[in-house]
Length: 374
Image (tube, rainbow, N blue to C red):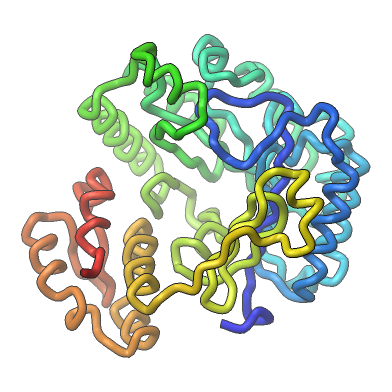
C-alpha cells in the first residue's frame, strides 16, 4: 500500500505522572523531561510523511492528558492543520482520570478530537492502589461527568481483570458499574505479566497472588455474557461496543492494514515494512532516523498476521478478501487446519467469512498458533 493510501496514524506521548505496576509500554516519568523539545521533534517526524488525509488518528501513551495544556493544544492543532476534517472520522486521545484538568479538558473540547479513551482499570479504590494507579473511583465518575458536559459522547474506558487478589465479585462489580454509566464502549483486558514491570518482579519472588487460569476463564465468560445481554457487540477478543461505536482505529490493526506510527517507541506499518521507533526519549531526540528497527514482512508472515489479527474480530477473516490479497484461497493454505478447528468447535464459517466461536475466543492463543506456517 502506498503511503498516501494509508488512512490511520498512531502518535505516542511517552510521559506519565506515575508508573503503573503492570505497564511495559514506552513511557517515562514526566518530571524534568524535555516535553517541548519532544513535541517539536514528534511533529517534525509527522510532517516528514506528508500526511494530508486520515480516517483515524489516535494519540496514546504513556499519558497524553499529562501534557501541559499549551503543549497539547500545539500538538492537536499541528496534527490536524493539513487534514480534511470531513474525512477524519475518529480522533481519539487517551486520558487518565487523575490528569484531566479543566485546562486540558478545554483544549480537548475546542479541538477536532471526538473520542476519549479513559484509563480506568477498576472502580475499586483499594485495588487501584495495589496496581499503582493514582486515581480514585470518585475521580472516574467526575471525569466522565465533565467529559460529557464538555460535549464528549464517544467515551471508552479500559478495565483489567485477572489482577492480584481480584475476586469474581470484584469483576462483577466493575462490570455493573460500567453498565450503570451507560458508556458506548469498553475494552476489558486480562492481566498479562510483562518483563521489567513491578508485577513481574514480584511474581519472580513468589509475592504475587493471581487468580487461577480457570478463574480467569470464568471472569471472561461472565464479562461476555453480561455485556452481550445488555446489547454490547463483542466485536473483538477484548472489546465491546454499542453498534456504531466500535473502535475504527483499532480495526486498522485487526484488518492488518497499514498505519503511520509517530513518536518515541511508536510502531508503524508502511509499504510492507513493520517498524519501531527509538524508545528512550533522549535517543529519539538525538537520532535523525527515528526508526530503530525495520522488518520487511515475507509473504508467509503477512498471511499468518492476516489470520492472527483477523480472527481476533467477531466477523473474522473474509474468504474473498484473503483470496484477492494473496492469490491463493484459505482452503488451499489452511484447509485441513480450518476443518480440524471447526470439528473442535473453535471456528465456523458464515457469510463468506471464517470466524471464531466463543470457545475459540476463550482459547484464542491456542487457535492462533495453529495458523503458523512451517
